[in-house]
Length: 96
Image 1 (cartoon, rainbow, N blue to C red):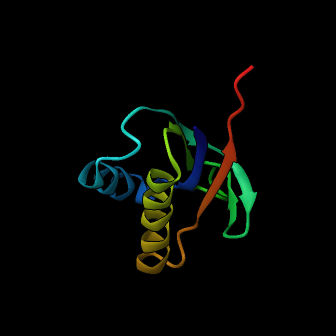
Image 2 (image 1 turned 60 degrees about the vertical axis):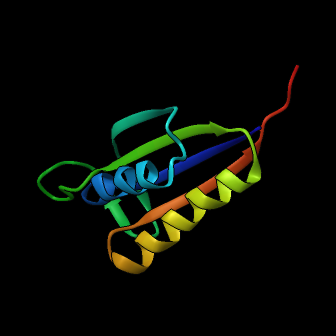
C-alpha cells in the first residue's frame, strides 16, 4: 500500500477530481479543501494580497499502478495549467 499526497491550486481542484473519477482511482481519500503555503508556484494565503489557496488530497492506494495513474493525472494538469501549481508526493506505508 502506498500513500499519495497532492497539493494543488484550488482553481484546478474540480478538474483533478473529475479525472480521478474518470480513471477510477483515488476514490477513497481525505481532502483538506483550503490550505495555505508558499511553494514553487508562489504564495497562497487566501487574503487580499495573496488571494489564492490550495487544496490537499491524501489517498492510500493498494498498488503502484494506481499511484502511477494519479501521478499521470497530476502531470496532465501541470501541462494543461502550467501557472496554477500542483505537486505530487508518494510514500510507502508500513504495517506495524
